[in-house]
Structures are given as C-alpha cells and as structure tokens.
Image (tube, rainbow, N blue to C red; front, side, top):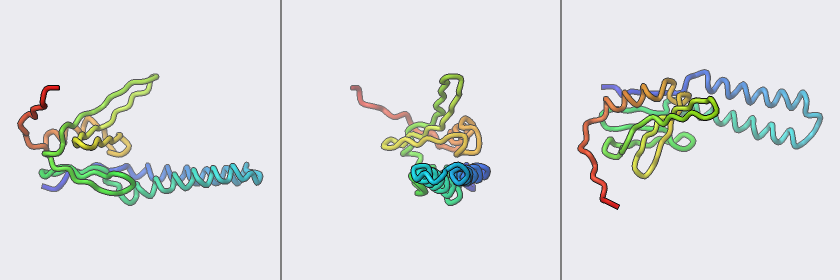
Length: 146
C-alpha cells in the first residue's frame, strides 16, 4: 500500500512570494529613503520568501502508512513516529470572535504536532479519520494513578 500524503496547496507558496514582492514594491514606492522602512520591508520579504521556500522544499507535511506517520518538523526536517509512539490523534476546534479554527493534533508523547488546513490541503477532520482508519488497533494504555 502506498503511503497517504497531505501537502500544502501550490497556491500557498505563490501567495507568500507575492507578499514578499509586494513589500519590496511598497517600500520602493513609499519608502522615501527611510532606512527603518527598508530594513523592516527587507526582513518581512526575506521571512515570507523563506516561508515559501519551505513549502517548495517540503510540500508534503504529513504522510502515513502501516508503520506510522512521517511529519515535517522545524524548517524542513522530517520525523517518523511509529504507531506505537502515537498516543492520540484528534482535531482541536476553537471558536473565538467569530473565527473558527481547526488543527489536527498528533500527540507523540514527548512531542505534539499541529497541522492546519493550509498545511494539509484538506480538512483536518478528514485527515484524522483517515489516520484513525489506517492506525492498527492498540490495547488501551494504563496510566498510573496520581
């Protein structure tokens, strides 16, 4: 069976690069030689360009197969978690000030990995369902009483 993969939509790095270009154009048009505006625009444009580069280098944010899940951590590193290391998969839903956010949460015991709809290219609920179906059935864990 080939691994399931979830990736960043191609429009995302393009949008980030357009934002970087827009910052440069705005500072050229309205900067009037102010060094603070130039530094801020350069820092913002560089940050957006690096963020877009990450999307190009590692577009697949999450993949899963029968052995476990492989996810992108940090700038562009990968980490594999065997299913036995995955303690929980769930979708964290929050409603605040009329804005709804959903994040896929993969609890690796020592680490917590969060993925948005933008990183997955699809709804976190759909990914959680697919991961749960792929994950082998494990006996319940017994936590010592505190």
